[in-house]
Length: 104
Image 1 (spheres, rainbow, N blue to C red):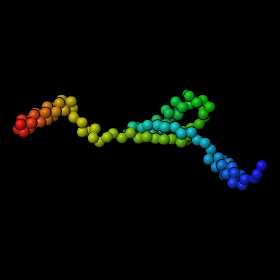
Image 2 (cartoon, one colour):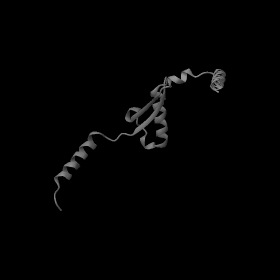
Image 3 (tube, rainbow, N blue to C red):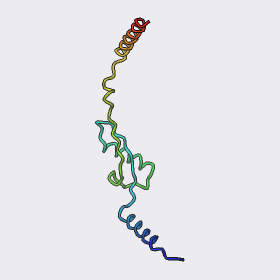
Image 4 (tube, rainbow, N blue to C red):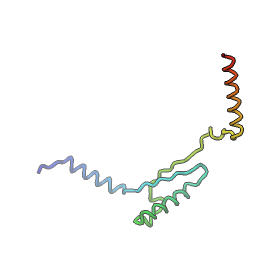
């Protein structure tokens, strides 16, 4: 068997990296605007612990978190009530019909 210094060095580097940074599990949480992320993280951790009892005793800070913040689309704030929307659509329909008669 031939001695390969590159493979030996690679193995040493991988061992050093594994020793420096232990594996941390990643949990995800989705937070709506105005909600507390910590409360959501606690709930997600409780759900995770119910499915994985081997992680009992770990805290929120022991995990890496992916947090998604849901922000409402500003265009949604301009939505009209249904009655107003129907009136606008009827008016638009009448205008289109009048324009079509003028063209004909």
